[in-house]
Each structure stands twice: as structure tokens, then as C-alpha cells.
Length: 447
Image (tube, rainbow, N blue to C red):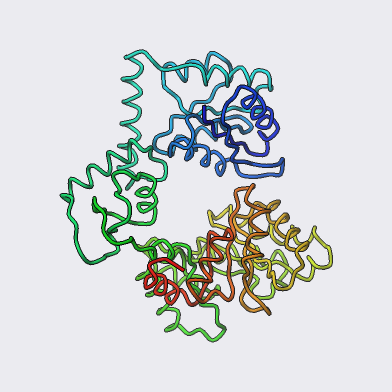
């Protein structure tokens, strides 16, 4: 059986034992992390396991945290997942027989390895076969679907292939199988038939597509996807209100991921982007990173109050090069804690052009300890910007902790953007955003 398994730091050791146990039983196990006992956030890994199950990449999922409760809550937010927490063999059997649970959550602080192995074995070997239980499971699924629609839309990444087929059948019926010329941001033409490629369709929906045609045509566009990688940036010291307003308008038109500005413009940008899905991003300690940690924390909280949903902070490069890791950790924590309090995403700028590879790795490790969401290459103000090699190195260090990499500085073309994404970047910072997207459109997404 294909099984996806994950854990936070509290469940890491039990996860390792269960992976070994499952593989000894002949199961195909996909370990989605975490990879150590370093502190991480359990929702990141619970979602990974849930999405693997929902997408059909795993037949069952197992997630372990301290108590198993929080991970169950997270997993059950993903459509197509029925997560059940089990604390003994009976509850594991009940979850399968009565609820057809496809994801099991365990509390490493509540049970030992021997009992956990027994629970897992029962969970994997028990089926939901009685008609009355199957009817109730169908009701659970219907309730989940209705709740997603009532909330304003479905998380398509979490839908099963069967669910996607139903959605696509409805879409094709609405469209009448029409082929047509012309592109709009709501219609994707061409490529593989969406009715037979649920994964492709799911990806397009994630990127903002609202309609599909049912048959082959010319290759589909990629600019909408690429735009969602980009933080549209204006950090010039001589930026005027008119220049900032122009960037806001461009972001609204192209639907970039965010607009990144200096703190004095945050409120203006947040107001200008209201009603769109484009986020407001602010820099902190920019561009030198030499402000004291408490000042960076205050700057972060002020930016969040003004409307920032993402914060890009610059570390104290000199302290890192001097080996003062305690100071650098305190420096990063001042921002990441403020971001967690304010519900904002935190990105840590390393200024890679000034660092050795060993220093880059240390900075990434410190960012992991501070539970940042991203590490970022550059400010764009130093002697060099992002390189694919640096992105790959940073991704190799932080990926296991559920963190992401932002490449920034010197990204001026579609080819530059493609190289960064292929190296592991999931976000790009650029001021040449429009030129990059237009180049991608002209090339049809091909380098």
C-alpha cells in the first residue's frame, strides 16, 4: 500500500520507527518530513500528508504530533480527507470501519512505539464494508463539499481525482465542449484534455483559472502561473507616491503574488490592493540589516498593523560572519515572533553575495530555528543578487522543515526566473516583473 507519513518535531522519533515498521511490512512509504527534532509547525506537515492522500499520491496517510489533535483538525480542512485520531487499537478500527478514515493522526506524547505500530497495522488492514457505514461516509463527504462551497470556493489541490472528474464534467457541460479563439484570464485553452488530466486541471484552478475547454487546441499559457511566483517590487529610495501607485495598478492587472515596498508605503499599498488576492509585503531592517533586534521587531509589528501580510527582513550580516549565531538568532526571532503574532509570513534575507557557502548554511539553519517561512537570497543592493546555485543550496537546507526559498536580485528575464524556479525557488522578487511575464507569454513558456 502507498502510504504518506509525516510528523512535527515532537513526533519525529516515532515517525522514524513507524517508517521502518511499515517498510518491513512491504508498504511503499513516502516520508514528507520533518527530518529532525528541530522545532517546526505541525500544520505544514499535516497538510502535506493530507494533500498527498487527497491527490491520490497515497492510499492512506499517517501524521504524528504531540497529541494528534491539531494535525487531525488541519488534515480535515483538506477536501477529500477523512482524518481520525486514534489512541488505541479500538479507535483505529472504529475510524476505518465506521468512517472510512483515510488519514490517521497519532500523539507521540500519548502512546509508545509498540502500541503505535499495532494501531497503524489495524488502521491499514481494516475496511469500511457495511452499507450503513458507507452511506454515512457519503454524507460526510457531501457535508465537506458543501462547507467548502459555502466558504467561498474549493481548495482544488485537496480534491481527489474522482472529485475533480465531477467538477470537470460539470464545467464541460456548462461550456458545451466549446472550442474558441482568444485568451482571457478566466479561460485556458489547449494542452491535454482536462477531463482526462485531473492533476493538470487542479493545478490550473490553483493558479486562478475559472473555466476550461474540453478538447485540444494550442498550448496553454503560463504567465498567470509565473505571475503568482513574483513579488512585484519597488524599493528605490526615490520612489514617489505616483511610482508606488503605478506598481499597485500593475499588480492588480497581472495578479502578482504581492507588492513589496518600503515601510512608509505599506498602508497606501494595502489600501490600493484591497479586494484583490495580491498581498502587501514590507521590508524590515532594509537594506543593511544593522538595526537592533528590538527595533526590527517594532518595525515588523507596525508594518503588520498598517496592512502588511508578508515581511522580508535583513539579517545582521556582520554578526553572522563574526560567528555570533546567538545574536543572529535573536535578530531573526524578533521578526518571526512578531509575524506569528500578526498572522504574517516571514522571509529572512541572507544577502548571499556577501557570504561563504558555510555562512549561507548557518544562516538557513538559524532561520529554521526561528521558524521563518522563507529564506531569501538578496536585497538587490549588494554586489550581487540571486544565483541558481545559492537557491539550490538554501533549498537543500530548509526544505525538510517546510520552509521555502525566495530568489531576489538581478532577475530580469523569463530565463532568469525559470532557472531560479528549477533550482528550488517558490517565490521571486523582481522589479522587472511585467517584462518577465510578457517574455514568458511570447515564448509560450519555453526557454
